[in-house]
Image (tube, rainbow, N blue to C red; front, side, top):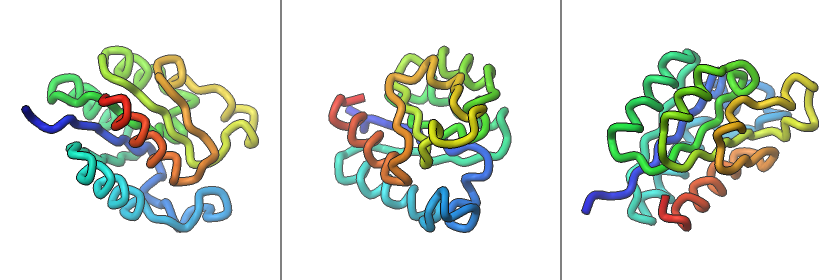
Length: 147
């Protein structure tokens, strides 16, 4: 039997994690986040694919690929696309596995336009405001539920 697989998607500007608004997003880099997730997945016997893009279509293509490659769950921080992308919602609606939406900051304490999420209409769970630890919590939930 092959390893269970999870895909982690990071949306626009998350490549600047650690240097962009560290008062909001912290000092950990995206590499730090991904390396910690890889380590946790490896210890649990899971395969993991971490992908970041500033381009909506690349995120959608990765969701489409996850439909076909045996991925059991997607952890997604859609960043600004959270509030704008019906296309990402549609792609996630075509994915049959579990979806957990993650936000580093507490979006509900920020500008009102950040309070609405298209992705939440599909997400099985939403984690916001735990900093980068939210990714770890999401991965724990997926591993514990076996996808």
